[in-house]
Image (cartoon, rainbow, N blue to C red):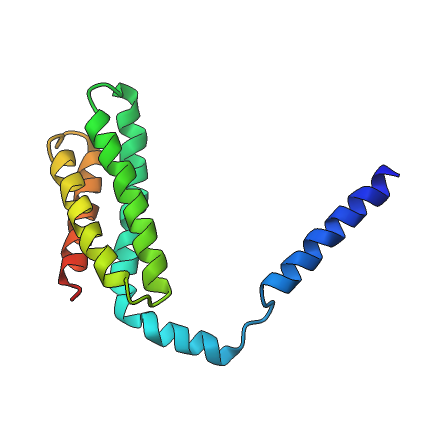
Amino acid sequence: MKTSIFAIIILGFLAMSFNSHPIFPSKVSFEKKSLSIDKYKECIEACNSCILSCKNCEKSCSADKVKMAKCIQLCQESVAICTASVKLMMLNSDHAKELCATCAKVCDRCATECEKYPTMKDCKDCATACRKVSKLCSEMK
């Protein structure tokens, strides 16, 4: 009895996933999407690198949550805005440039905070990654 219920649930999930997502997207639509996001390629890569650096910085700074609270908060904000920016750029959204302008400001603030701790490697790496994102997102007009 339990096995048949489990099998029905699995079949239901499979049916839902087959109906909601194409298994094999057409090559033409993939090529069009790829060409349309080429203009964002460098910024997407910088944002993805920044996300990793900010997460590492946040993790390192969490050892002293009281002293490093502002750094942790700004790293979390940078991760959130970079993630959203990447998603909109990947969609070739008309709003990508607007969000990237905000991303530049948030990452600039994060970099400024992280630069206050030059002896901490993760903060230094985070500041460098955030500055790159800030520059690339600011240049997007």
